[in-house]
Length: 254
Image (spheres, rainbow, N blue to C red):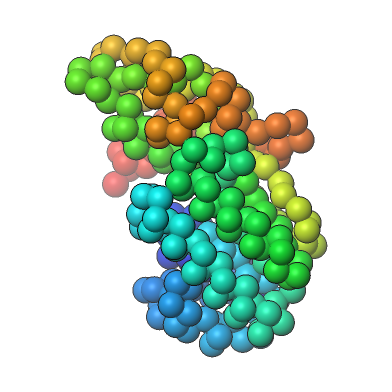
Protein backbone atom coordinates (compact mmCIF):
# COMPACT_ATOMS: atom_id res chain seq x y z
CA UNK A 1 0.00 0.00 0.00
CA UNK A 2 1.30 3.45 -0.90
CA UNK A 3 1.07 6.03 1.89
CA UNK A 4 2.08 9.67 1.49
CA UNK A 5 3.07 11.54 4.66
CA UNK A 6 2.70 15.30 4.28
CA UNK A 7 5.23 16.85 6.66
CA UNK A 8 7.21 13.64 6.45
CA UNK A 9 10.52 15.18 7.47
CA UNK A 10 9.30 16.67 10.77
CA UNK A 11 9.30 15.40 14.35
CA UNK A 12 6.18 13.27 13.97
CA UNK A 13 6.25 12.74 10.21
CA UNK A 14 9.73 11.21 10.14
CA UNK A 15 8.70 8.73 12.82
CA UNK A 16 5.48 7.83 10.99
CA UNK A 17 7.47 7.26 7.80
CA UNK A 18 10.01 5.01 9.55
CA UNK A 19 7.31 2.96 11.25
CA UNK A 20 5.26 2.41 8.08
CA UNK A 21 8.34 1.56 5.99
CA UNK A 22 9.38 -0.99 8.60
CA UNK A 23 6.04 -2.71 8.08
CA UNK A 24 6.71 -3.03 4.36
CA UNK A 25 4.58 -0.23 2.95
CA UNK A 26 5.57 2.11 0.14
CA UNK A 27 5.91 5.44 1.92
CA UNK A 28 6.60 8.88 0.50
CA UNK A 29 7.99 11.48 2.93
CA UNK A 30 6.51 14.60 1.33
CA UNK A 31 7.76 18.02 2.45
CA UNK A 32 9.39 21.12 0.96
CA UNK A 33 12.71 19.30 1.45
CA UNK A 34 11.57 16.69 -1.09
CA UNK A 35 9.99 19.21 -3.46
CA UNK A 36 6.43 18.88 -2.17
CA UNK A 37 4.77 22.03 -0.84
CA UNK A 38 1.19 21.75 0.35
CA UNK A 39 0.78 25.55 0.57
CA UNK A 40 1.71 26.21 -3.07
CA UNK A 41 0.62 22.81 -4.36
CA UNK A 42 4.05 22.13 -5.83
CA UNK A 43 4.72 18.41 -6.30
CA UNK A 44 1.47 17.22 -4.71
CA UNK A 45 0.02 15.52 -7.79
CA UNK A 46 3.20 13.53 -8.43
CA UNK A 47 3.61 12.54 -4.78
CA UNK A 48 0.01 11.34 -4.43
CA UNK A 49 -0.14 9.37 -7.67
CA UNK A 50 -1.28 5.85 -6.81
CA UNK A 51 -1.58 6.58 -3.07
CA UNK A 52 -4.20 4.82 -0.95
CA UNK A 53 -3.64 6.91 2.19
CA UNK A 54 -2.54 10.49 2.79
CA UNK A 55 -1.32 11.42 6.28
CA UNK A 56 -1.12 15.13 7.06
CA UNK A 57 1.16 16.00 9.97
CA UNK A 58 2.34 19.31 8.51
CA UNK A 59 2.38 22.48 10.59
CA UNK A 60 2.73 26.21 10.17
CA UNK A 61 6.12 27.83 10.73
CA UNK A 62 4.33 30.71 12.46
CA UNK A 63 1.68 30.46 15.18
CA UNK A 64 0.58 34.09 14.77
CA UNK A 65 -3.14 34.30 13.89
CA UNK A 66 -2.99 35.52 10.28
CA UNK A 67 -0.13 33.39 8.91
CA UNK A 68 -1.25 30.22 10.67
CA UNK A 69 -4.79 30.60 9.32
CA UNK A 70 -3.42 31.28 5.84
CA UNK A 71 -1.23 28.17 6.10
CA UNK A 72 -3.98 25.74 7.09
CA UNK A 73 -6.53 27.16 4.65
CA UNK A 74 -4.15 26.98 1.69
CA UNK A 75 -2.57 23.66 2.65
CA UNK A 76 -5.83 21.88 3.35
CA UNK A 77 -7.48 23.26 0.20
CA UNK A 78 -4.60 21.94 -1.93
CA UNK A 79 -4.41 18.61 -0.13
CA UNK A 80 -8.12 17.96 -0.56
CA UNK A 81 -8.02 18.80 -4.27
CA UNK A 82 -4.91 16.69 -4.90
CA UNK A 83 -6.22 13.76 -2.86
CA UNK A 84 -9.50 13.76 -4.78
CA UNK A 85 -7.70 13.89 -8.12
CA UNK A 86 -5.46 10.98 -7.10
CA UNK A 87 -8.33 8.87 -5.73
CA UNK A 88 -6.92 8.73 -2.19
CA UNK A 89 -9.22 6.61 -0.05
CA UNK A 90 -8.20 7.75 3.44
CA UNK A 91 -7.18 11.22 4.65
CA UNK A 92 -5.54 11.09 8.10
CA UNK A 93 -4.82 14.38 9.86
CA UNK A 94 -3.06 15.09 13.14
CA UNK A 95 -4.75 17.69 15.33
CA UNK A 96 -4.72 18.67 19.00
CA UNK A 97 -6.82 17.61 21.97
CA UNK A 98 -8.91 20.57 23.08
CA UNK A 99 -8.87 22.36 19.72
CA UNK A 100 -12.56 23.23 20.00
CA UNK A 101 -12.09 24.46 23.57
CA UNK A 102 -9.24 26.90 22.85
CA UNK A 103 -10.70 29.08 20.12
CA UNK A 104 -9.45 32.29 21.73
CA UNK A 105 -6.13 31.20 20.18
CA UNK A 106 -5.47 31.99 16.52
CA UNK A 107 -3.60 28.68 16.18
CA UNK A 108 -6.50 26.60 17.42
CA UNK A 109 -8.99 28.54 15.31
CA UNK A 110 -6.87 27.59 12.30
CA UNK A 111 -6.76 23.93 13.37
CA UNK A 112 -10.55 23.99 13.75
CA UNK A 113 -10.86 25.31 10.19
CA UNK A 114 -8.57 22.51 9.00
CA UNK A 115 -10.69 19.86 10.72
CA UNK A 116 -13.92 21.35 9.35
CA UNK A 117 -12.58 21.40 5.78
CA UNK A 118 -11.49 17.78 6.00
CA UNK A 119 -14.88 16.66 7.33
CA UNK A 120 -16.65 18.49 4.49
CA UNK A 121 -14.33 17.17 1.77
CA UNK A 122 -16.23 13.91 0.98
CA UNK A 123 -12.93 11.99 1.29
CA UNK A 124 -13.07 9.20 3.91
CA UNK A 125 -11.06 10.58 6.81
CA UNK A 126 -9.70 10.12 10.32
CA UNK A 127 -8.67 12.96 12.63
CA UNK A 128 -6.21 12.08 15.39
CA UNK A 129 -6.24 14.63 18.20
CA UNK A 130 -3.14 14.26 20.35
CA UNK A 131 -2.15 15.84 23.64
CA UNK A 132 1.07 17.82 24.05
CA UNK A 133 4.36 16.06 23.35
CA UNK A 134 6.99 15.53 26.05
CA UNK A 135 9.35 17.20 23.59
CA UNK A 136 7.44 20.50 24.05
CA UNK A 137 8.07 20.79 27.80
CA UNK A 138 10.98 23.18 27.25
CA UNK A 139 8.76 25.46 25.15
CA UNK A 140 6.20 25.51 27.94
CA UNK A 141 8.89 26.53 30.42
CA UNK A 142 10.23 29.26 28.12
CA UNK A 143 6.76 30.73 27.54
CA UNK A 144 5.94 30.57 31.25
CA UNK A 145 9.14 32.15 32.54
CA UNK A 146 8.55 35.60 34.05
CA UNK A 147 11.67 37.02 35.64
CA UNK A 148 13.06 34.44 38.05
CA UNK A 149 9.81 32.49 38.39
CA UNK A 150 7.72 30.21 36.19
CA UNK A 151 4.02 31.09 36.06
CA UNK A 152 1.55 28.43 34.98
CA UNK A 153 -2.23 28.25 34.93
CA UNK A 154 -4.08 25.80 37.22
CA UNK A 155 -4.81 23.42 34.35
CA UNK A 156 -4.23 19.73 33.75
CA UNK A 157 -1.93 18.32 31.08
CA UNK A 158 -1.64 14.73 29.83
CA UNK A 159 1.46 14.69 27.60
CA UNK A 160 2.90 11.83 25.60
CA UNK A 161 6.07 11.01 23.70
CA UNK A 162 6.30 12.01 20.04
CA UNK A 163 7.12 8.37 19.28
CA UNK A 164 3.79 7.32 20.78
CA UNK A 165 1.98 10.02 18.78
CA UNK A 166 3.52 8.69 15.58
CA UNK A 167 2.59 5.13 16.58
CA UNK A 168 -1.03 6.18 17.03
CA UNK A 169 -1.10 8.06 13.72
CA UNK A 170 0.41 5.05 11.96
CA UNK A 171 -2.14 2.69 13.52
CA UNK A 172 -4.99 4.89 12.31
CA UNK A 173 -3.47 5.20 8.83
CA UNK A 174 -3.41 1.41 8.47
CA UNK A 175 -7.01 1.02 9.62
CA UNK A 176 -10.33 1.79 8.02
CA UNK A 177 -11.33 5.47 7.91
CA UNK A 178 -13.08 6.53 11.10
CA UNK A 179 -15.01 9.34 9.42
CA UNK A 180 -14.62 10.88 12.83
CA UNK A 181 -12.06 11.74 15.47
CA UNK A 182 -10.01 9.77 17.98
CA UNK A 183 -8.12 11.27 20.93
CA UNK A 184 -4.73 10.00 22.08
CA UNK A 185 -2.84 11.01 25.19
CA UNK A 186 -0.31 10.10 27.83
CA UNK A 187 -0.89 7.65 30.68
CA UNK A 188 -2.19 10.20 33.19
CA UNK A 189 -3.41 13.76 33.63
CA UNK A 190 -1.60 15.96 36.15
CA UNK A 191 -1.24 19.69 36.87
CA UNK A 192 0.93 21.69 34.52
CA UNK A 193 2.82 22.87 37.60
CA UNK A 194 3.87 19.25 38.16
CA UNK A 195 5.23 19.03 34.62
CA UNK A 196 7.30 22.13 35.34
CA UNK A 197 8.47 20.77 38.70
CA UNK A 198 9.56 17.43 37.21
CA UNK A 199 11.41 19.23 34.43
CA UNK A 200 13.19 21.59 36.84
CA UNK A 201 14.18 18.70 39.10
CA UNK A 202 15.60 16.86 36.11
CA UNK A 203 17.66 19.96 35.29
CA UNK A 204 18.65 20.41 38.96
CA UNK A 205 17.01 23.85 38.97
CA UNK A 206 15.09 25.39 41.87
CA UNK A 207 13.13 28.27 40.34
CA UNK A 208 9.84 29.32 41.95
CA UNK A 209 6.64 27.97 40.40
CA UNK A 210 3.67 30.34 40.62
CA UNK A 211 0.08 29.37 39.86
CA UNK A 212 -1.40 32.14 37.74
CA UNK A 213 -4.88 31.69 36.18
CA UNK A 214 -4.17 34.55 33.76
CA UNK A 215 -1.49 32.53 31.95
CA UNK A 216 -3.93 30.16 30.25
CA UNK A 217 -2.36 27.84 27.67
CA UNK A 218 0.18 29.78 25.60
CA UNK A 219 -2.00 32.83 26.18
CA UNK A 220 -5.29 31.14 25.23
CA UNK A 221 -8.10 31.09 27.79
CA UNK A 222 -8.19 27.63 29.31
CA UNK A 223 -10.13 25.83 32.01
CA UNK A 224 -8.81 22.96 34.11
CA UNK A 225 -9.56 20.23 31.52
CA UNK A 226 -9.19 22.22 28.28
CA UNK A 227 -6.19 20.26 26.98
CA UNK A 228 -6.78 16.78 28.39
CA UNK A 229 -8.81 14.11 26.59
CA UNK A 230 -12.31 13.03 27.40
CA UNK A 231 -13.21 9.43 28.20
CA UNK A 232 -12.45 6.89 25.49
CA UNK A 233 -9.04 8.26 24.51
CA UNK A 234 -6.30 5.84 23.50
CA UNK A 235 -3.59 6.18 26.14
CA UNK A 236 0.11 5.44 25.79
CA UNK A 237 2.16 3.77 28.51
CA UNK A 238 5.35 5.83 28.80
CA UNK A 239 5.43 8.38 31.62
CA UNK A 240 7.19 11.72 31.44
CA UNK A 241 9.67 10.66 34.12
CA UNK A 242 10.57 7.49 32.20
CA UNK A 243 10.92 9.47 28.98
CA UNK A 244 13.31 11.92 30.64
CA UNK A 245 15.41 9.01 31.93
CA UNK A 246 15.41 7.47 28.45
CA UNK A 247 16.56 10.73 26.86
CA UNK A 248 19.31 11.07 29.46
CA UNK A 249 20.52 7.54 28.74
CA UNK A 250 20.56 8.17 24.99
CA UNK A 251 22.54 11.38 25.46
CA UNK A 252 25.05 9.64 27.75
CA UNK A 253 25.58 6.88 25.19
CA UNK A 254 26.57 9.30 22.41
